[in-house]
Structures are given as C-alpha cells and as structure tokens.
Image 1: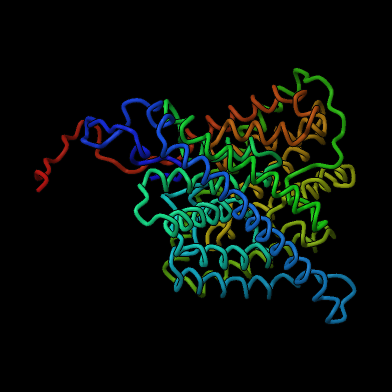
Image 2: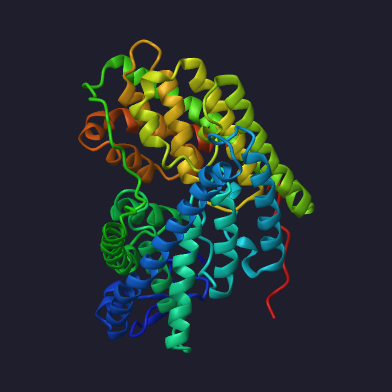
Length: 464
C-alpha cells in the first residue's frame, strides 16, 4: 500500500463493500466530518514540527560530513586542495557501510533507487535507523544519489512510530494518513517549495479521485509547518534551508520555432538515455544483491574511478561527477559560458555512468542526479544554433526528470518554478520536452512477461 493512500476509512467513516470485498468509504466527506479526521489534522500539524527539524538535521549532517571528508580531511593530510583520486577510497568505505547496513539492519536500508521513486507501503519505525545510516553513508561519501527518498521514508517512519507510541490501537488508515503527512513535512523545503514536494508525493503515490483531498490536506498542513521550521532553523543556524534554488538565471527570450524543435529532440534523447540508465542499473542491481558486500564496494570504487577519469579528461574537479548535483546546479548555470560542448558531453557521460552504478547498489533518491544530468544535456544542446542557454537548461531538466521518475506534472513544475519568472517564459518548451520524453519512456519501458495472446487463464483453486 503506498504511503499516503489509506487502506481503510479514517475513524468515523462508514465502510462499504467493494466488488472484491475490500472496504471503501461511501462518501469522502464522511471522513472529513468525523472527529477522527480532525485529530489527524492536529497530529499532522504537531508532528510536522519535530519531523521537519529532524529532516533539517539530517541534511545539515550530510552537508557537514561532505565538507569534512572532501575539504577538511585532505587539508589535514597536507594536500593543497582535494586530489582527484580522493573519492575512490571514500566510496569504497561507503560500499562497506551500506552493504552491512542493508544486510543486518531492518528495512534493507530503505528505497532501492534503481526501481524508481517509490514510496512503498506505510513506513516502519524499525527501519528508520537503517534508512538513516545507509543514506548518510551514501550521500556524505560521494555517491551520486539525492536525499529525497530517504527523507520521505524517515518522515513517514517517524510519524508512524509516534502514532503507535501515543495510541497503540490507532486505525491503519489514520496511521497511513499521518505517515504521509510526515513525509510531506520532511521534504517540505527540499525541492524549493512545499507545493512541489506535495505534487511529487501525490504523483508518486498515485493519489487521485475523491480521496485526493482527504489525503492531501494533512500532508499540505504538515508541509506548511515544516517549511516554517526549515526557514526558522536555517536563519537561526546560518546554514540556510538546503532548498533547491538558483542564484543567477540568464534572461530567457520568447520561445521560437527552432526551440520547439529542439524540445522534441531533447525529449527523445532523454527518453533513450533515461531508459539506458534504468535498465543498466536494474541489471547491475540483480548481480549486486547476489554478492552484496564485494559488489557494493566495487560499485563505489567504480564511481570514484569515473570521477577521476572525468577530471583527467577535462581538467575539471572530480566533484562535478560526485554527489547528487543539487548544490552544483546553480554554479553550472551561472558558469555555463565556461563549459565547452566537449566538457559538457564528457560530464553528461560520466555523470550518467556514476548515476547508474550508484543506483544499482546504494541508497538514496533518483531526483537530483536526474535534474543535474538533464541540465548538463540541455546546456550541451544550447551550444547548437537556435536554442538559448536558459531554455536548454530548463527543457533538459524537465525531460530527464520525467524520463527517470515518470512523473510529468512534477517534472514540469521542477523545471519551471526553479527558474522563477524566466521559468514561465520557457514553460511551453518544457511541456513539449516532458511530453515527448514521457511518451518515449513509456514506449521504451519493458512490459512484464505475461501469457501469450489468446491463451486461456489457468483455473485457480477456490479460496479456503
């Protein structure tokens, strides 16, 4: 059962028998009018405070560890700057830590990024330590994954754990609603706006129909509270909100016919690249799971070697390939004039390979590497006639995001809201690129094996 999609009506709602005998609410308004739903809203708002504070602490810890391991530690060993080979041993250590966490702690370290952005079922509080350890080891040591999937799991797990602690006999539907609200609070500021996070979770969980508002309202309330906490803690600590943001956006002109043609091309390329990354990572994941410890270490070392090759080929820092790409998006756009087309293509290839290897073995989210990879590809296309820098950046982000996540609304919002006023200007281009990439991705996706056409279904024994 996806998080945020209750299996049963909340307290006070009248169940009705469905075609399969499963219970479903006759009228969603009965849920909203019940005292149990009001309690869910109050609990969601209250839990949004500590959960968003924990999410802020998680992001702060990852950021400080990255700085310590990749800046302070090399200086402590007497290096002037970080050597390009520095990531290789650190990523080997990440492989050991993540493999042991997956093997020995409950929950398997959380979400498998090679399988896309899935929220899974209602998170378990027992899985929280394993999710946190695997994510911190992956993200802080340079793996090419983002923090959004671990935060979703941590927020939901903490919320469900709090509900079970306060009320052991809480209905599963109420726990699911509050768990979803915890996830909303945990990523409230991560993507630049609580609204983008809400759309991400709404599409990822498949919420729709009459129940959409019932489920979304507690989540939006928790996200609003969480956003306030993130902003307050960021100002109080001086660390900022760890929110996706761009500091310098070149002005975008009105979309031209040539740019619409490039949007189609970008969408088609993103569908092909995204499917290649996904299939490769899933194939590698199957092998890694059979030999967890040695192959997780090997995938970590591979990411480090890929980053080293990029640095040697382009004379750019190896850190351009490492990490999620969230903090690198703003410098990439601001300094885009300093990147040649050849450098951007090398970065696109190396980042894609490191992204694939990271998804196959480590724990984290697929969103930010997809955004960064798409941005690099879009900037590379902008070196060709007829496509502006900002337009290429935006449509690349949107196309690659939907190719990897299969969430079209979220992909359009991420690519346009990130650019502010200029995002509205290039939105038609982004929509075209997203639609082409989405349709192309669906057509390229391998369908699960089924019975041959015309085959009769085999009879099954009646249920006991």
